[in-house]
Image 1 (cartoon, rainbow, N blue to C red):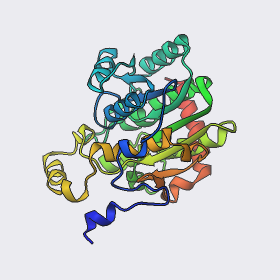
Image 2 (image 1 turned 135 degrees about the horizontal axis):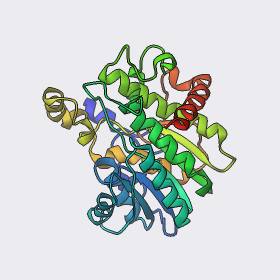
Image 3 (image 1 turned 90 degrees about the vertical axis):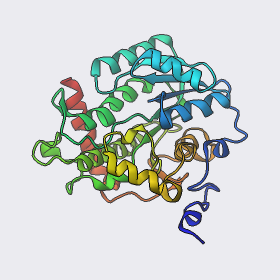
Image 4 (image 1 turned 90 degrees about the horizontal axis):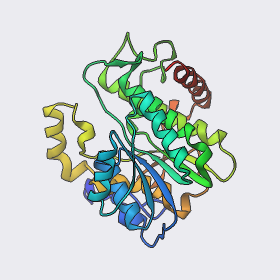
Length: 304
């Protein structure tokens, strides 16, 4: 059996590496349900929006501008409820929260999909390293601000990554969370993805019974998320795509499975990969670190 064939096997859920969004959502009727999707206008977010619309759901589509969110609906084959939400701008995130609250939507799942990856140069905004600000803090402000609108059986699905294992040796660098002393593109990205995972774990602990929160690794997919990786790495990924890279529908399958499938309705505080429960790094299982990160994030947010 080839490596590619082995990777595409099924797990205990009945799905696996090669499963697609259409397959994991087959037979589901999502009419009457509302799903929030960040980064709705490209890559995994656009495919997520497409399949949710196809299954009958309404999508609260969040992109950097409302026009981009609205256009995502057109590309996805339907219409969406568009909202502007620039995750690196706290005022924009809070405005999105206020608008969604004012519109009175009940949310069946939040799919925190958007992110940036592997910035070659350390970039600081509002005193925070930009990947940590965008991937973690922006989503923290958004999702905690909307918890009151989560349905009694609502779900929060957070895109982490196996790259959380590339976080600095300390995990979350609480003594230098903006990485002013030891910045690297992948170390910083890893810290932000570890923060996503720990946020989901701690949120799961805090949610009332019936509501769930989980994090996931979508797989390695060639999308515009990797636009900062450089020509060599992007070229290598393209050459290896047939062997190792997931397609976008395969990469999106795990978040659709987590957000919509009946089998995941009661799973909480988990880390998923390839539409199955997976094992994270030791740091990713550290609930003391998760609790400390929550408190530190609240302190940061209060100052923004």
